[in-house]
Image 1 (tube, rainbow, N blue to C red):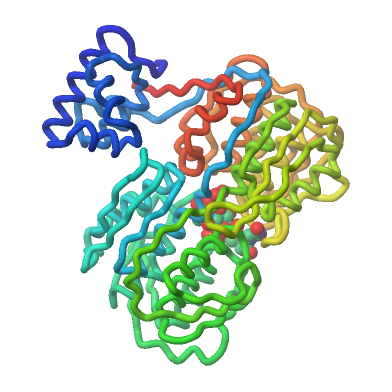
Image 2: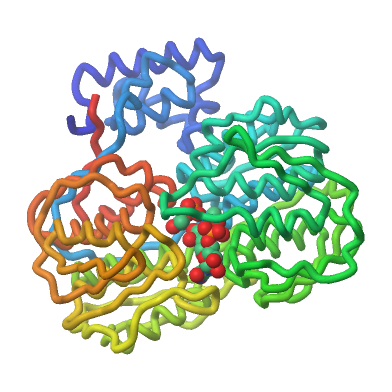
Length: 513
Ligand SMILES: CC(=O)N[C@H]1[C@@H](OP(=O)(O)OP(=O)(O)OC[C@H]2O[C@@H](n3ccc(=O)[nH]c3=O)[C@H](O)[C@@H]2O)O[C@H](CO)[C@@H](O)[C@@H]1O
Ligand SMILES: C=C(OP(=O)(O)O)C(=O)O
């Protein structure tokens, strides 16, 4: 069923919404704020004078906690893509999932108020927010829903944690670092996130043990107890240069009474954003952007903090890949260039025709941005294997996009994801859309281009980036494709379908009801 509601139904649904809102004791302005829209838009909806999608009805139902209008949530969301058209114009990159979730977790470090500007309105953020509010943090959307204000309670109610929401993310692991400063004993459910095969938490536990956190993993949860730690007289050496493990160590170090040195730290984009946020909390950090971080901890933090996370390099890569596979001329604005430089150098080697603007700063005052204009190009396969490396290297989350790009290029490309056991496998799904992708082993695929894409109906794989890669191939394929159950995409991209439509894509959102 297509997600538009028309005619007389609009008036009846408007009345239902008004009743539910009044029942909740909210004004139109309050509902507008919760939805990230204006009071006048809510007024028009209630009068049946505004077209309203099932998506919007679902959001209203959720905001009002109302059965009557939660109709749209009865089934998963799907996309219908009419492909084969070119994209054009310009599109802005939004803030990153991975920095936003780290900063949400970091808000637990201060007893003051945290305001996060331009927060990505994505499912992953909503899940972490549900966990935060379940333990007593008050949250409020400001400025048409772009900014988020968080106020912690005097005492967290950790026993009330929303376990279902927590389990759906991997980011919840980053509660370990901050919570060790707020409670002596607590539990966090096993983390979820993309299904990429086994993803270790051992490096987190090893690093946090140095701060006195002991974790027993039983009964589907990490049971943590805080012991007075031995003095940190030597550096904490991470056993792998992972992003969330570095962030967890930083979160523990931020309120550690003394100086902590973290070696083999990830200098990646989300870690840098977290460091800038911690600095605003008064935590001095030396070595930001390098693999050795020296953190001058502040045992009690009570500051209010206001921070704008930087733009998402992986979203920038996704939009760039969208332009390439659809042979479009597209301007991608607000690209965090430092974190896409190597990818661009490889693409340039493949023959990508593009321009970049002079650099300017992101709102955090630190991250360097450019606008990129990509033009239709005749691409050849890269000579060398595409493989990820910890920053600076090709970002592992950008690797899947090379599969779609390689399928559009002439020749054979080897893609080697040495880290994740399961992510390369999902790329073979592209064969259903006409690509020639062979799985050599769980970590390596061989892509033979160019591709004559064809439409197909498919389920989303349970991994964010491969799911988006399939969506991009559908944009390139003539005809109508269907991508089912796109929660995984909504986990990391804000309104992706609508935003792609604003640059010429034809994607319709629908649900089974
Ligand atoms: C919430 C969050 O922030 N999630 C990101 C984070 O997960 P997270 O830090 O939880 O990643 P995992 O612990 O699952 O895996 C990390 C592994 O990836 C390696 N590694 C890391 C970065 C890199 O560019 N290349 C690379 O190969 C690390 O050395 C490590 O071996 O980091 C992953 C690796 O970047 C990303 O896929 C995830 O989107
Ligand atoms: C693997 C990813 O995310 P997560 O760590 O949230 O599963 C991703 O962003 O591609």
